[in-house]
Length: 135
Image 1 (cartoon, rainbow, N blue to C red):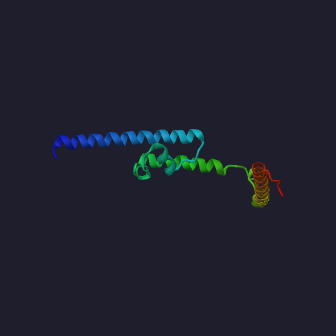
Image 2 (tube, helix red, strand yellow):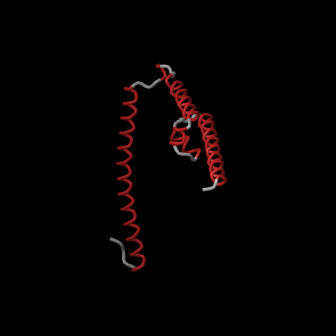
Image 3 (cartoon, rainbow, N blue to C red):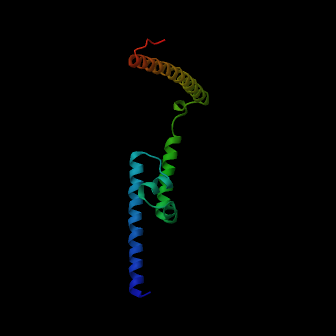
């Protein structure tokens, strides 16, 4: 391979890396601005780069870890009085499961009623076509 070709390949690789770094930084700013969770997978998906690229670029890796730490610190500063207790969460879960069961039973009942209504409508349609009275 000629020296010119090698130089051209190096320049192109550097340009791709610079572009990928810029996209990753924009993705970081966007996630942080929205208050979304900052992690390697989210940044990689938005920036269109691999997670390996993010891990292997020290500045990006450090920035992601810093922003991720800030978010966790902010979330952990919620006062204890404002946090839901385990008992409260269990109660809400039980209520949601009970509602879910009730809705399943209601759906089954409505499906049965709909099947009967369709059958009745079909009998009426057939009797109208044939001139016979329905049973």
